[in-house]
Length: 59
Image (cartoon, rainbow, N blue to C red):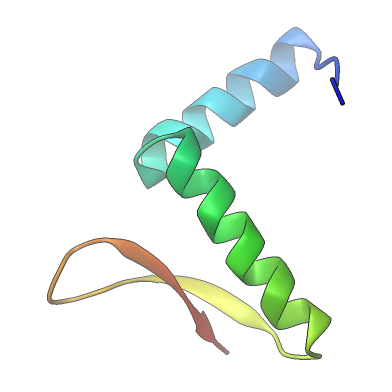
């Protein structure tokens, strides 16, 4: 399925992807947050101190 984004949405999405380390990481974090929400929990994104990568933790 294709979606059409406005220029502003493309710019915002690209900026977010760069902040989290790329589109693959952005999609992974989004999926992890959605999985937590599906189980009735709230999540937040935090940086792992040992690896420096972003991950989702239950809030």
